[in-house]
Length: 517
Image 1 (cartoon, rainbow, N blue to C red):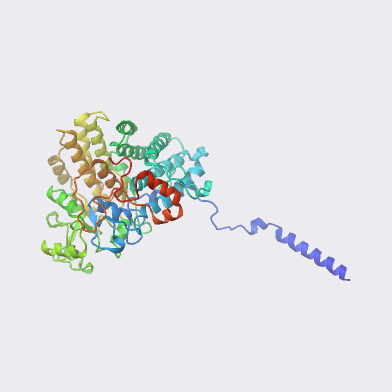
Image 2 (image 1 turned 45 degrees about the vertical axis):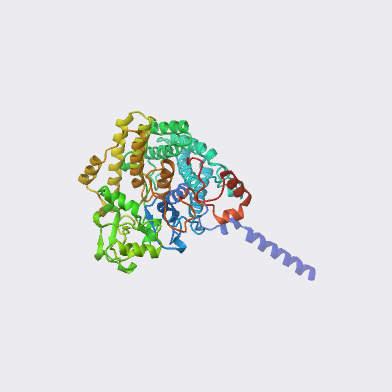
């Protein structure tokens, strides 16, 4: 009887097992969960995170705390979490921000797109768009830190490379140029149009202009270290066709879900802590530049953050006063009292209700920047036209930047009359190349406001505009020429980091990147 019972039990058990196995995969597969993501959406993530403002921590982005402070456009007198370029000091809470954003939020996604589409001929345009975005990210990373992972970067998942070696900047730049050249030339208007693309809606003609514009920028970065390579690269970009109209600007649009990183900070807890720097305000004020009233606001008589209210706001250019460089809270207060402002809270700010709203756009590259680089290229004799072309491009760059102001907010729009008056009063001085370069670089500095990575790169490359060293008494260096490596990278990828530091000559704020001569 026991044997019969056991046999019956075994038979029932087997039946239950086979019954459970029937349609097992179907039953245990989610009908609603995401099992695959279209690589086009991954590229959008990379594009959005390519915004010069970066990802906001709520109190900092590298663009705000380092780059714009280094080029003396916007600073804070606060210590603590906002320390960076304002005091020319290392702040290990802020130095990793560019590294983290571009490696985690741009390189990772573009590498995934490249891997998924490399052998898919139907997505060739997407593949090449990802290569352009990735090349731009690598350029920003190497311009910020010097030697960085390149050939082994972004391959932790695909190749199980968890401790990537660092490549020298000297070896990275030719590869970036090759990538941009090939990827841009390979974009095909007859191929699949990626309509979900957040940058240009899949418009291949605009993507080509964007790719050649980034190529132009890469070539110009080499002007002091490899003039032959720079000239060949710039010439190729010019021939391909770069962005010269605001209609083709590479704009990162922001909304309630995807905030402007810098706008998020200055509209949050740090609203009363960031101010336009005195050199930037004075430069615009002393030349009657209409962009000052488009950018700046001052809360007259404010003695605290809550006192910065619309009722005391002025955008009048003659009533704008920038915060002195090297100011801490105490010295900023003393300087404000001495200037008759009453309080450090009464210095001029980038208007968070116009140019720096949470929904304000950011520009990866603009027509104003490109026209000015074309002016320099013509003045150098790298593209046709000589000084006549340089003058034309120079004026076009100024006008394009002024016209761009309306993109931020209707209240920042500059009239055509004011624009033309300024442009006529400020023609390009072609008496010598250095005179032209100084003027072009000054206008590039203004046109790159809020584009910290490029404003800083061009300042290091040309030496213009001429800025006095930050006078803060506790500063570590005279001018910051690179950002130090993240502590986490030094801890986890120690050998490769130490090799890179040895090659560069130190992990310091005043260690120069390869092309900075």
